Image (cartoon, rainbow, N blue to C red; front, side, top):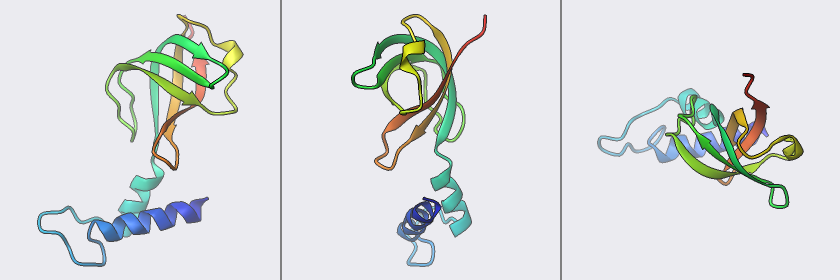
Length: 118
């Protein structure tokens, strides 16, 4: 899997001007910086569950800002949920903390959900 990330990072690095012809005014990154940016695809957030769709493995969350490399503004959005997340433990109105990532297709996926302690 890391080999795939390295290849993606290398392709991204080449396309943004590392080791090739630079585009006028385009930022230049080292291969290490491009690889680091490609691998840092998670974020942490807090929110409230608005709906759970177990059949489609999706949850709708109203959340505050997501911190970390994904940086996301506050919003309400439906997210796909990773297979390891127990949807039966979630219910409408529950306050949660979550970890979110982007998959290979660039889609957001909730990787971990923890009920917020009162």
